[in-house]
Image (cartoon, rainbow, N blue to C red; front, side, top):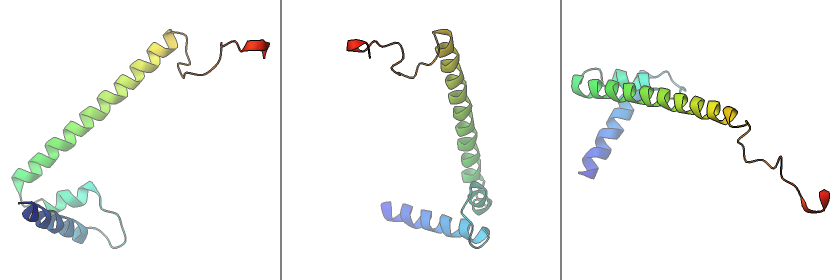
Length: 90
């Protein structure tokens, strides 16, 4: 089973590479082009790309919320040493 999967992945990468210009890196669009004749797999890739975009937006929103909470709590929030008193007054 693993051998079949490896053969399929190599074939897919080879087809994607053929649609890319020589010397360029593979992009998602090259894989979409390689899968254009398989509507089931192409639809699944589009679903996964949409889910990835949704997760990325959710992470950005969470990061913004954390920054807003950090600023409301007194800012910084970086675990720095400001406000710590060192022994000996230094």
